[in-house]
Length: 250
Image 1 (cartoon, helix red, strand yellow):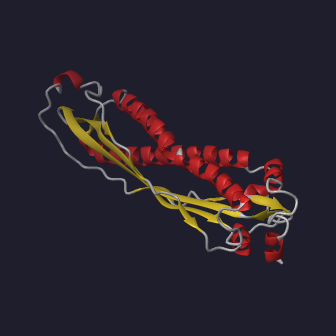
Image 2 (tube, one colour):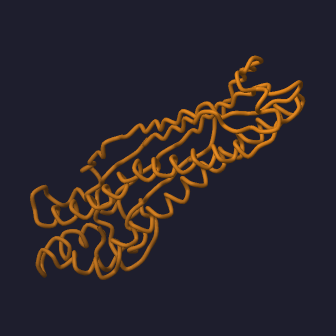
Image 3 (cartoon, rainbow, N blue to C red):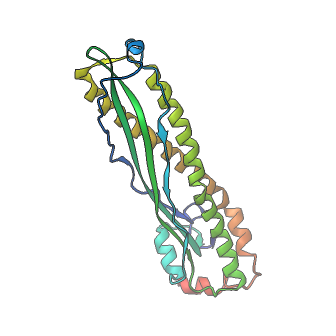
């Protein structure tokens, strides 16, 4: 939360996407020479079974830090304006995309690639909530700041739902892509496999970035000058927002 005459509304929160990378792409090569429907698939790579898709989401409960002064919070925000930062939420995650493709011989020297497993892993590595240490727990001002930061926490926690939705869409698209492919020669299998792993890894990263953009827009929607003005007056005209905290900033 921020109040007038210090830090900027738009930089009130510090949401860090942080090191989201489509890394650790792994392909397990299993050449299956005897395939039940090989003869029927010499000119087609129709996907016989859907890939196993499992999202591994390692969550972290938000942790409250009450040992940071209002001056520290404003330095942390690191941008000047007419608003003062009295609370801050930091959120950071990292992601890994693991996909296994299986080459299957469907004719003499002809192979199809099939997606067997899609296993993205998303881990929340930071979810911290700061409330200025000058505000005593149980006071009106503390409750106002804490409630506002709680809204930011809820926005962050929608991440799993949004990622699962995008994973479902991605699996459907991948299945359709492979069904439309034609067999390739043995010499092209590894090159095609590397290209596809990179392509889908980048697509996963793009989808995560889109979710992050949407989440940041949700944060901005509750960090407005009008909202800060309202909150700064929520505890009366002579509250700590107008007295204690500005004094601590001097």
